Length: 197
View (cartoon, rainbow, N blue to C red):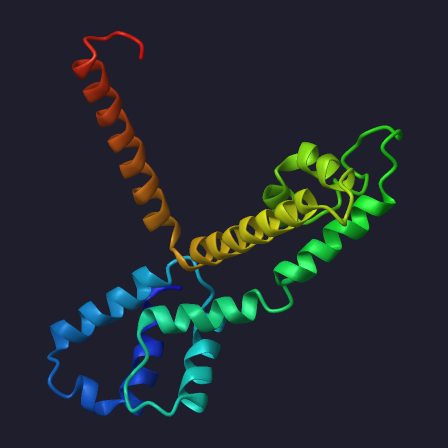
């Protein structure tokens, strides 16, 4: 979203929530526009605009929406139709039942056609093979199912979080994490006198 588009969004918010803006001077309003633009840098104006209108039309609050609430509305729309944990497990098991373990492994076999969050949650092709070999009446099967569902939920939650972050923020967090890891590695070397532990 561009600065001009962010200004349109803020203009709509100013019209609906005039009390929020009445004590702001021009400089503060420009800063507010910049905050919205930076927050939605990687988002399409249409998506942000629709989410703001959705909030205005459906909220009973007298308060203007926060950036996070608008991102939540966009994510809810974007992730609508994504299977929940139980549905994802059913998709996984249908694929596993169709899978011929003696066939040539390829990216277009039943495993290869699964959505990425399901592949990650099951732990790759190895996990896909392992769960299909379990008897559904055993505790091991129940444990695998529970583990899959927790992992799948974590994958979807991470995807939602990643989708709501502008790229510049994700890059800064990654860079900071890499920097902290390097500092930690140096501290470990320092504390162990460079010896492997």
